Length: 230
Image: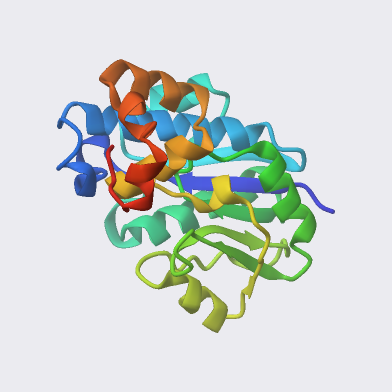
């Protein structure tokens, strides 16, 4: 299998994860976004078969932290090329191919703190079609989009109901377990589930510091009742 080059996009930290506002202090939300991104990048970079990781962002703090992890940083597009997550991922993919030539591409969500390199390696091995996706834990969103064709554009369609839209555009859904990969974090309940799976070092340290991890270790009775405690 060809080496794959990963692309991740993250917006300004101050604008991220507003759906966690009811559970986390405003100063802690950007820190959580950065910690989850760091763990996502670290897991991707440690995955056999991943040749590089590129993060597209307008945020100088993200740039500093990610550069320290050995990832490439690509400025977010401006002007007519700008337009949210999909434009950022497409710009990152184009930058990757300018550096490395007609390589295979992997677009990853930035909020996968429970991601394991072994899971991602299994996805790369299972992705034998020209275009593949892995849906999120709810089955509607997309956590990973893989293009196994160095001449094919990434064509990301992230956003609401993105799994269906990627499939309609020709992507084949991969159906492995991969719980850490599928568990993106948008809500307090998502954070609860990620903590139960076991998050990366950077996210774990932050959750310990702000006292969230203790709450996430809820009793089975609370979990059965469906209560999110993060």
